[in-house]
Image (cartoon, rainbow, N blue to C red):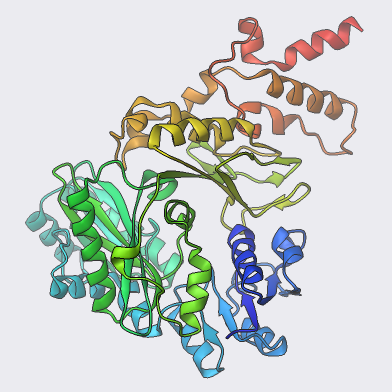
Length: 520
């Protein structure tokens, strides 16, 4: 049994892990950079230790310093969360050498699944379908062109050492291949320190469907059903739901069994996610395996009633899984919207600023995993995810309606967020009918849709007050007028049913406040 766990992460996932540790009666140690000194995870943990430095490499990726802190604070185990060191086999090995438990899979499994070309070869042996493509990395442009001609265009160039959309390029013809190869290799080297790439067939109307798996050290392995993750920008997820509206019972069972085979093929232990692409003909193909907890794990928790972080910890302690596959059931439906500091009008560019107001939604069957608080500074040093909004219900239509209400109730000011985009998706016919794929954004969203929408009275009130305060220098020397140029992006309260009084107010609700001030 562990006594104390160090959380080698930040933001909402650090808070999430701390909560499960508390419920298990475990003490926690948080680490933080100077930028995160006001972050909630530093306050929630029993102990918090500052990491000297400013960059991620100097702080949350500093393996030696993190291990030193674990020893100094007498932590039995380290939970890496996701990102940073969560899929770093060298760090997992270093934990073993220091006799500190790494709450995750064995280094061997991390390496085998982290190298995408090796993983494809393993899947071939395990009888799990993989997309047509090269069996190994491509070295020269000539090899790539030959592979593209053999596979048939369009093709995807993908990084051999990582995922998350990094190093990925869609190529429509042989003429475009050399330039795309150069860009993909450069991005892959920067993201993973490895410029190896491979090529696979680009699938028609692909849907991104993944299965949560758990395996213990006693030979047991189960899946906890599926998640649909097809709403993506830059090959990175924004909205997830469980279960997928696209799978029927037969296909769900078949893919779940394939996911378990994937885990067993590498002797997996702990929590992992097997990702598939499913084409318009319902043929599925192995995409990759993430050897860690996923950002979207809450939707699985909502439909199964299980605490996945607590389960990770218990497996790391050596406990067997408490149930067999036939004893795991799902109830209802769940959707997660990622609240990111990004501007959806400007192609989801990262945004920065100070969180001036943070008022998360609440109510029955609504959950918020948050990593910020009012007054905290959001920078480009780390991932733009600041919170996750998750809702649960009896069926998908009920959950969509509940999510719309929860998005309307969520207020964050200081910078643009993805809340209005998530609201737009919930209202879109293709999403409501479950007829969408990974091309949803290029097919249905340009950003102008948000500018055309009206604002609510509450937004007009907040925007007007902030603008007046800015004009009166109530916030000090720095002006806030640029922060509220479009309040729909800033607060996230976006209600298409509320109509403005006239066209002038539709363009700028704060004009009403200006006229009122002049009259006074």
